[in-house]
Image (cartoon, rainbow, N blue to C red):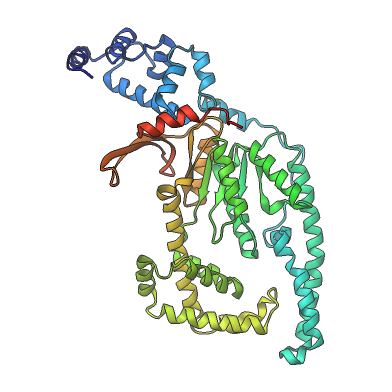
Length: 494
């Protein structure tokens, strides 16, 4: 801005300050002094609310426009040119779905008709029988049992114990057939629903994972704010497909139709679940990432009931990810138990030897002798410290570090970020706000020094209130901005 222009703008702002109000005409005079295009009256009224506004209201209206521009356009200049001279109806159309009235949406949810078909609820303790890999254990266990029965003395087993376990497998096999048929019928019902609100993206292999997902989904859906809304949601613990092709098509359909995806960050993650997160973000739809934040003592008691192969798997994974060696985690572990390294090494050997001698993973009663030993509760405490540290690390990674936690919408070029929550209640509150268009945001500008080019760089974030997570982003980098918006919509060349 040239010196004379700055003087004129300063004089205009001084006059506005004396009157403490600015009207539509004065606002356009200010824009012309700034060498910007003027706006229509409907634009002014939509974002500023009245014809005579205070300077604080002016600032609030500008931020409101910036927020909508970041939500839907990813570029302030483009949003300004698109909206500046539109009518109110046209502006609301351009800002859809974020222009919808919260009160109308709430009334719509509360007045929803009942479903014509309800799913057949599969109980928590039987949900693992829905899984392809988890339920397949029954057949594998039967093959192993057959070999053990033939030479049970050589393996040190009592015949009556193996026969009792065989009866358990027969019951499980019968239950599996019933449960999987129910789950197939549930899938048919999901396909008849005329709308879908929420998709839960999970990874489930072990029995404990199915039960954790079941509990989490029920905690969210039965929250007092959510339970009144008659939501329709896809619950993976209640669904079964005939083959992987059908499964991929059904899950793709649910992701396309759902308004929001809830992504569960668990002990382990999979390509399928991560793809579902990326697919939702690329559609410019919200993704809520739930990262557990358990109390260490409660988590220790919880995992103490898990089978021994869980402890072996988690210790090896945490070692491979160098969680035990992280300086912060290492100090926390020393505070919990100064002999934690010896205990980990000891139980890796004990569990390895036990699992070699007792290969029946569903025969968890046989593990009591190891779990009743003196140091086992210490092992649970050690793993609880490490796992809770890992959850905190994952939350920080999604909120602050990983660049792919923000994905570009392939239709509009808008950067869409993951909203990280740490409890089922936070998840339910955020989900309610998303579905009723009642989100609250702040705009934060981040500056950093580019050490390579010795220059100042920066970007603006639209930060959601509950999760304190970046939901949209705009870069200050001029070359990137220019190239991105010039090339993004260009047709691909042969």
